[in-house]
Image (cartoon, rainbow, N blue to C red; front, side, top):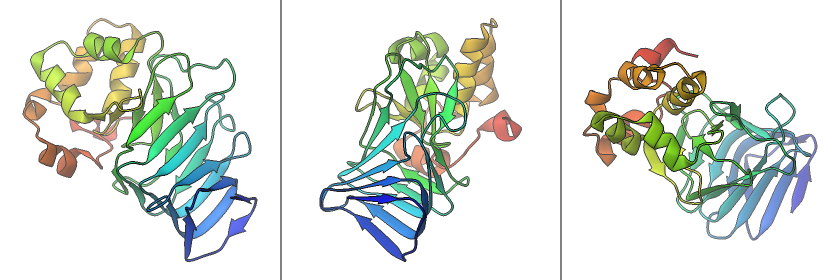
Length: 239
């Protein structure tokens, strides 16, 4: 176990054998968490920010990210300047120890990286919030569902067969209780549309992304085309 409070200068930093790295600061080179043996990453000092060059969250890794509010400084964040690789049995725990809950469409970016530099998905994502949230792999953001459950969110948002097919294609896992999505900011736009309360806003969000094109998306196309895209269709210049 170890705690960082400045700069850890190393070509390669391995966190395994049951060890944990916590704290704030900078890690140069590549950080490997887990792998053949377990390793844990807990950035922040309730909470805080960790800057990493390249981050590999390997099998048997556990990353705990604390969210105590939506304002800067109220949540843990990992800034990755290079690549972020998430592997098979890695797990993400979204921790919370106060009464804060994310509203529908409200989002918190717990990982920051350049477009196209993330690959893979967590083996499981769990949350300590009382209300449901989803995780957007494409942007590193936790997105609130407000009073909706995961099932209610998808049932409310996806009306047509094309909508449902697109939602199913972009949801890559729900293991651990928190669904993970790829497909750029799509899930963020859809939740924001529902939160607006504007009639037709959610269908419009699907229409902008041309759902008929994605109705037959297979795993191979999903992985090669959608994984590392921040935006779909008309969302290319979206916020």
